[in-house]
Image 1 (cartoon, rainbow, N blue to C red):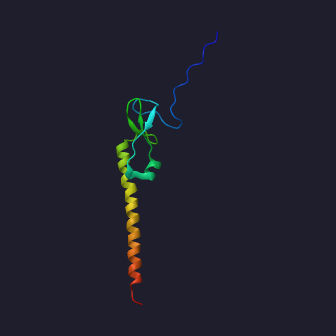
Image 2 (cartoon, rainbow, N blue to C red; image 1 turned 30 degrees about the horizontal axis):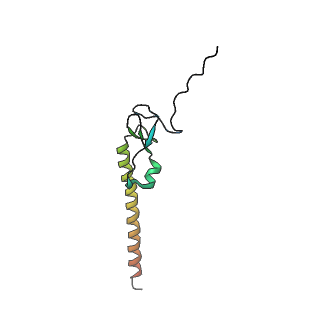
Image 3 (cartoon, rainbow, N blue to C red; image 1 turned 90 degrees about the vertical axis):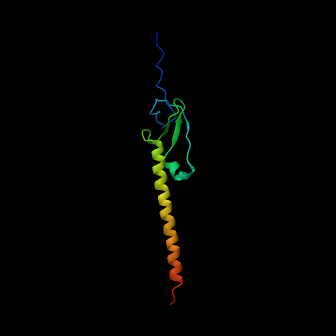
Amino acid sequence: MSQPPPNPPPSGPPGLPPCPKCGGLSFRTGPWPWYLGTIGAMICKPVICNGCGHEFDTKKPQAHLPSRKRNLAIVINAIGGIGIIIVVGLIVWMIMNAMKPY
């Protein structure tokens, strides 16, 4: 008599690692703060494990997600702030040059 093939190990959605806390493979989308915007969503993908409720980033499962979100917010908003300062500085420079008598 032939035995049935062994059950394959459970697998989650393709490309997603198991939960680092319980090893679960069932997830739902995690909350995403508005201030991280689209750029942050491309860098970080938070999910919540349906088994234990642990929230983690699928791109860096072992990272502490609140710290990761905070660091991303600081970097993204600092880059945006620097861009605004550069644009305002250029506008002021152009106005000053336009007002110079020849």
